[in-house]
Image (cartoon, rainbow, N blue to C red; front, side):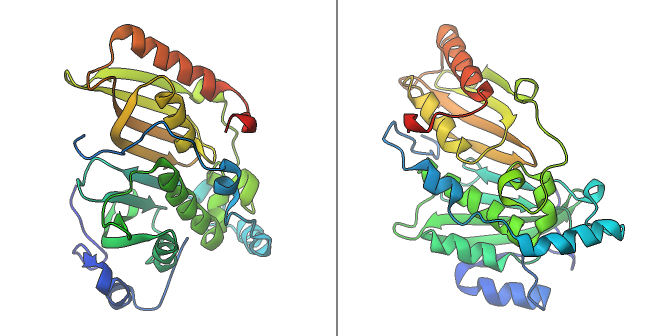
Length: 290
């Protein structure tokens, strides 16, 4: 895919010059909200209530502006609002976690998002912006500030995802009508409701002798990434690397998985598929299980 910005070339900058480079390119501030492995292990999880709700607050003061935009037939009209996409990619860079955020052509320089990531103990070591037919793509290479390595903790990866979505809801309140989290934390609930039974798909394909490729598509919700890893590791399957995409109301997941450093045999594949389908199609998660 060709990479280009509004000026015809990709933006690439390091952490030390991020702010200056963005301001130079965009002018006035306009903000919006074992290959390389995840390092997932079966360990006790953090309190998901805190993870799900931290920083996610309704922006009631923006509701009037959004509704007014709808009445005026502006771009805030729900049928014109693009689908927000947040991608956490552990495959494409062996040394960093790659975060990609797209919301049509509405996103600015995302300085507030980068500052929020730094507050999580992360460094944005590289970033670029490119345009294509689907909109403006903002990509960040992220490492942990304490050790300079890619993010391997599923809890922290989920915190990254929720932080980005929180900023989308704050600075682009119209995105709440397109996001699953908008039902609880946005000013406008989603215009559609996802049928979990219909939306949920789980498949496993061979990916060589040493691992398998797990595909999951289901209705999005806070804490989903951590919950998926827990259900997988509970049956002793290792998650090696992969990608977690938030696309509007849906989550689309690709995990490289293995059992004792080997690809999953057919009976274990079936156990994993059945476990995930049962878990994902339940209408609610029992909080006591965490």
